[in-house]
Figure 1 (tube, helix red, strand yellow):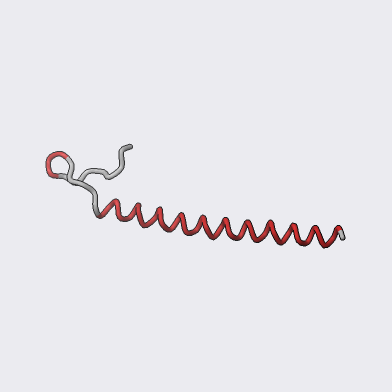
Figure 2: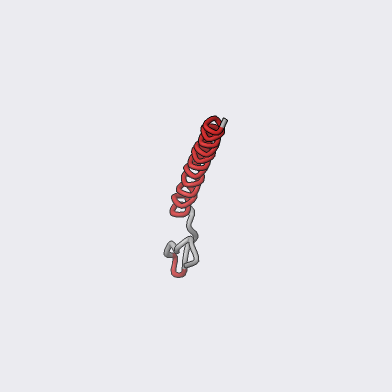
Length: 56
């Protein structure tokens, strides 16, 4: 009974880690697209130059 519980626990942990990693890949892809869009749609700064789209 204990080995069966250990195998089931391992399967749940691996499934959870796989799902989390897949979700992190999607989040990273969305952030990358937003970052690249920031270079395209940045507003004009002072003097007609294109300024930075981020604050820092």
